[in-house]
Length: 225
Image: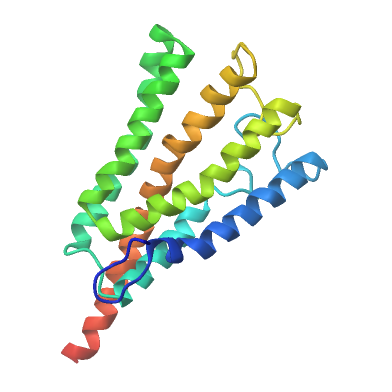
């Protein structure tokens, strides 16, 4: 049975379905663009390419706002959108600080794999603490995060297996390949389903809490006029 919110019975899965399908379409478009060697400005096939113009990394910003609007209309806003926004900012700080610590401390002393584990943990923690600010939005973003990243995980497995030459199977500088499963687990499976889901929740919450606060203020203004 789908998870629902109390009074208006908004299904988490139903709310995340359309954004999930849109994200899947963008994933397929990017894959096709990289395989056909379209403009690198839009379809970057190199390692680090997740920040390509055509990609899904920026979609949590849009859908975080979309989810927040839907939840506020259904009276499922956080008790304190100010607290939700503050925790979202804290989550973003953890993302940035985690990257800095990983690069400057963990990597030089403990190596690449320890750095990956550290970043996975930090970004996952940043996502989980968002449930303290706005649980309803966090649940939807969690569902959307997996809907967005599970297909990417499958694409990465096929890309590593077939050596497609896309960013999905690109090896980062300094990485020594130990075979298909090692590359896929370290560079595909675990990061997609941990740090990228955490990022999705934080990014969606940051912009969603702002949208929710604006919408709640707009709802109250006619009553006080």
